[in-house]
Image 1 (tube, helix red, strand yellow):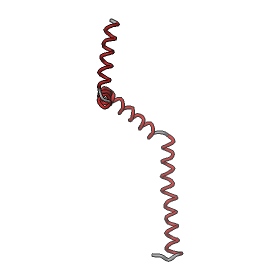
Image 2 (cartoon, helix red, strand yellow; image 1 turned 135 degrees about the vertical axis):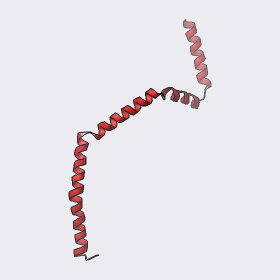
Image 3 (cartoon, rainbow, N blue to C red; image 1 turned 45 degrees about the vertical axis):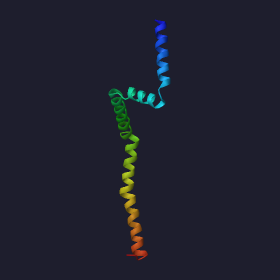
Image 4 (cartoon, one colour; image 1 turned 30 degrees about the horizontal axis):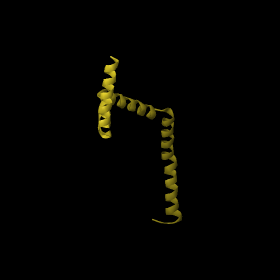
Length: 91
């Protein structure tokens, strides 16, 4: 049995050494790109994305950004427009 394993291993090593780097990469890629692996990757990516999007700190940051946009940006725009139209008298 041990002799058979060594023979098989030597044949495999010889086959692998005779193949080009690109061929070996293609074979490994085909071996890794199974339907199960792709589904696992997509599910993990979705879980990670959902975790990041529903993170409480991000919700707080988004609410604060909305409040700043609604109140402060509008007031800044109004004050600049008032200054340009009333003080500088540009139409």
